[in-house]
Structure formats: C-alpha cells, structure tokens
Image (cartoon, rainbow, N blue to C red; front, side, top):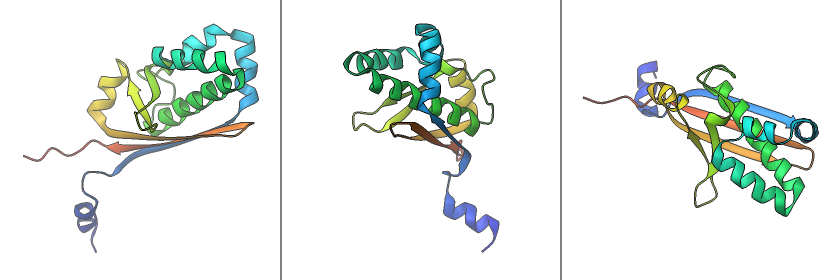
Length: 148
C-alpha cells in the first residue's frame, strides 16, 4: 500500500494536532485562593464562568474541578494547534461547553475562531477528573479538502 492509497482510505479526517495536559487540582486551588475572580475571568469564557459559579455555589470542590478541567483543556488545545498560549490563542477565547448529550465541545471566540477555521476542521476534547488530578486530551482534525 502506498502513501497515496492510505490518504484515499483516510479521507479528509486526518489528524492536524494532538494535545494533552494533566495537572494536580491543588495547583488550581492555590491560584484561585490567591487571585479569586480575576483568575476565573482570565481563564474562563462567559458561558464557562456561569457554569463555574453555579457549580461552585452547590459544592466548592465541584467548582474547582470544573475550573481545573477547563484549564487543562485550554492547555491541551493550545498544544494541539501548535501555538501554546500565544495570540491568537488566549485563555477565554477557547471554551469547553457541553452538547445536549453531555459531550464536551470546543467553542471559539474571535480572533482565535477565524484563525482556527482557516487551518483546521473539527476539534475533539475529552476531560477526566479525580479528587486530586485532572486531565484533558484534544485531537484536532486537518481542514477538510474542498472538492471541486
């Protein structure tokens, strides 16, 4: 099988980038206790902030786990797109929200959204948390080829 045979089998859904991040929850707790709402506003997008405050009001530990998973997802995403935390990538410009099914989905804001859409296709994110650690894994698809 030649490389061109493989590209036909793979179609347009080839991987454009992979990123992962794992961190201890106590690191987020420490920063949150030091900077409070300033940290939340810097890291989370508007919709994420609403979810964070609702969860933290019910159970502060769930709020911290939410914040930690979103922080890890943003780190993993920044690695997958190859920018790290450099413009147009910025913390609040990438949100992880949930589809009605509960599946985590990536939602981007400008200018990151336009930059991303010029280069990439779908973004897939997986989150997991334990009492002391969280992890995020992101796979970015290459931009689909336009058939003419």
